[in-house]
Image (cartoon, rainbow, N blue to C red; front, side, top):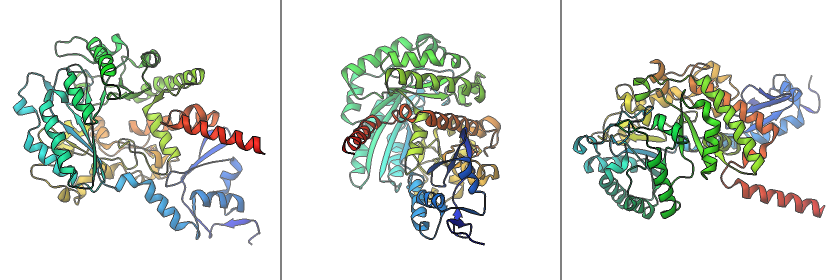
Length: 490
Ligand code: SF4
């Protein structure tokens, strides 16, 4: 019954997920290792039939959407490459230098202590720092990134100096490359502390929640005053005196009280000269639970998608490449050979496998969100646990395993499976059940909405989106020059 010009289903195995119509007559197919194909309805239908045209077979063989005798080994290598960062060992090590903070933001999920609380109790001690460094350097990852968090990490600046000096000294005895960053509210940080960061290449990131009235809604001191004026003043001073130390895209948390103002917020960041923003929905943890600030994901997405459309139009109008972090993360998945380094949006998630959090007292957690959920996700203390012991225990990978999307039959049939990123720790916080339920879990709903938006916009006009990727402007200019040169030559 075979006919020339066709390949039959005994000549290949499927390595793709079901299709999704991303625009009229345009069907997306993702492979297990993240490559994309956009097919016509006619082509897409052939993947559900007993034979396909040679031409389509060759195309799908090239991208590894089908496994054949010819490409099987190469495709397995591509799968391994896709998961490079998943299995290479923890690279991100979040170190909580202190639980004390000068602020008490309404959405904070860290349960911070008062600035006047005892440093002896709530700051990381040198013996804990030593154990954290040893634990982190035991990771097989060739790159180790220490991220200092708090509370406000600069409140334990002596601890930071000790940590950086010791980590550098001990890393020099290995073949690992280490670097540092710090997340601060910038209000109390002194020039000599920023100078230390500059000297040691420590990138400083910070939150700025829009213009004054919106920022001050959330980011408040213990005496219940706003923090905007002080933060903006420090941002400007630091940018001027220490160019390149501050991150160029502030973090911005969105709840019910500021969601409707997202568009003016985009304008505000743009006017202030930032290169982008990271828009985050507030997490149902810590103060958000105490102050009942919960916010429905569908409501958030309505405003978020509207804001992304606005941002995109603004970029087109101005020829700018102002970006949003999650859009950048997903674009790098779509264009990259390996899943990106963003540990919170991966299948499986990076909990312990790619990132570890060490609380101020040395307690080990699979993610920073798990800090207020030690009873459920705590993994013991660096003072009496070794990396080698923990990495062999199944329990260590509880949240990572629960995030694996091949566990669930609905997810096995989801077009977006390889680009998905659920967070069992947040599911547990919201529902008491750490197993993400497809189409109910907030991260599932967000994955589907954002990817539907992104692929539809890519179909309309990919250039303004690709320009959001770092370095992409140069590549686009080079490609345009090549095309021009070819046209002139031909
Ligand atoms: S959780 Fe949702 S988006 Fe993720 S694979 Fe499952 S169905 Fe798809």
